Amino acid sequence: MNVIKIETLLKVQQLQDQFDNLEKHTQWGIDFVEKYTKFVKERSEIELNYARQIRNLSKKYQPKKKEDENKYTWCRAFHFTLNELNDYAGQHELVAENMISQIIAELTRYTQELKTERKTHFHDGRKAQQQIEASWKQLELCKRKFERDCKEADRAQQYFEKMDADINVTKADVEKARQQAQMRHQMASDSKSEYSSYLQKFNQEQNDHYYTIIPNIFQKIQVMEEKRIDRMGDSLKTFADVDRQILPIIGKCLDGMTQAADSIESKTDSSQVIESYKSGFEPPGDVEFEDYGQAMKRTVSETSLTSSRPDNKSDRPSKGKSKTLWPFIKKNKTPKQSKEPLSHRFNDLMTSKPKMHCLRSLRRGLSLKLLSLNAHVRNLIEGSNPEDFSHLPPEQRRKKLQAKIDDISKDIQKEMDQRDALTKMKEVYVKNPQMGDPTSVDPRLAEIAQNIDKLQVEAQKFEGWLAEVEGRMPVKSDPPRRTSVLYETQNSTPPTNNNCTQDRESSPEGSYTDEQSSEVQNKVQTETPEFDEFDDADEEILPTIGTCKAIYPFEGHNEGTIAVTEGELLYVIEEDKGDGWTRVRRNEEEEGYVPTSYVEVFLDSNAKGAITYI
Image (tube, rainbow, N blue to C red; front, top):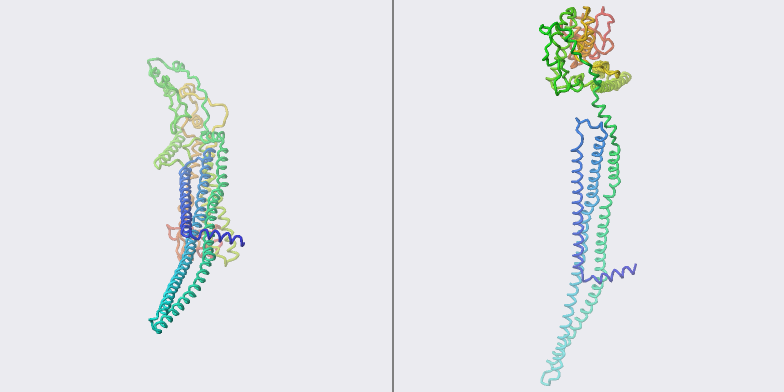
């Protein structure tokens, strides 16, 4: 310990005349700390800007809600890469935050403390320097006074000796000169004593200054400077550690991107494309040979009205144009039927029997055709697709209907879960009335029941359409044979029976049979409103079985209900059947259902099961 003190004193003695240089050096050190702080601040701003740009880039290329890209593995891999890139940007934001909190904030605070400490140390050093300089000046004054008094004493002694040797001088003058010389000697002696004591004091102060005060100040400055250097080293280490801390997470992000790239399956994506755009149509069969020679045998003569014209465009194929197969035609378009020769039409007219007895079937098919046409026009005007997805191919329509049924099933399950929860809550309220009013749950239960009924009707409607699609979809079997309309007309035999059943069996493509009519009628029936029983009940007026008084107001927003006010008197036409609703009438035109718990019912004594509900 003593060796360290001696070394420190030696160093201080070497720097005792470099006080100003030390002051400049420490100020330069503080400026360097501030410069480094500014450097870290700019680095953090770069990290924040980089993270912001990365986030904006990831957000820009995120899939939109309308785009259905998640079903392909390469799209999912790209989306996963964007998410990992977003996490990557978050790590750079973390770097900036850690630099701000761990380096910039700490160095800013430390710089202020360093400036204050440096100011204190150099203030103490200047004060000690001023004190030693003041002591030195006082010593110089004492020294000059002692020197002046000594010279005055010598001159007085010489004057006395001169007066004493002169015989012409009186004894009184000699005595006066002697007293003057003694006085000067006394003054010189006092100055000497004062100078000697102050010199000892100055030497002591100087010794304390150069061996105690200044070394202590310099040592504090040295400690301050070493702390500043150590703090700079710690900041540089933190600067590297902040980046090193995020490397594992960034590595995980990059590994996630690599795994996303490895998860791409080209065969799965191609199979998904096939599954998405599969129409469900069977490929057309072989085209049969069309024998135009039979038309010549059936004609009477070339000059008769029944002769076929050789320049009929439908009888000869157009040159340079291939026939378009019907599965590849645009939507809402059917293949054009070739026109029959006039002779064929005339022969069929002469040999066939009238079919007026099938007018009822024709009217039914025509009416349904008009209904379908009106619905199609209405969809075109509204700019939306049909609700039954009839504009799609069979396979795509089946998928859409199945997805719609699944969504409705989920909604039904959700409503049923809510109903079960409310039922349990009502049971708890019944057992513990202090927890709540059981009747307060009834409106919500009634609303849920209505929602379930609506959803079930919707589910039945879509299930009917799905059954229709699945029934009409072709089953993979022998390829169908494709024949032209002309060939079918030529080889068909005229009907010999007037039975409507045979006419319906041989109805052409596009007409409506009884089976199709029944299917359409069932579909129309499934689309009827939920509260049709209220409309049917309006045809007959039910008798009054009692009266009731509303004890709570009821708004009656749902269809089939009636709004009542508190204290209003109404007629009861149908009592509660266990579903929590009572049917009431206000006048001949206004009637509907109200919650049983909202009214106080007074049934007539002759009414069946007369009970008073409160």
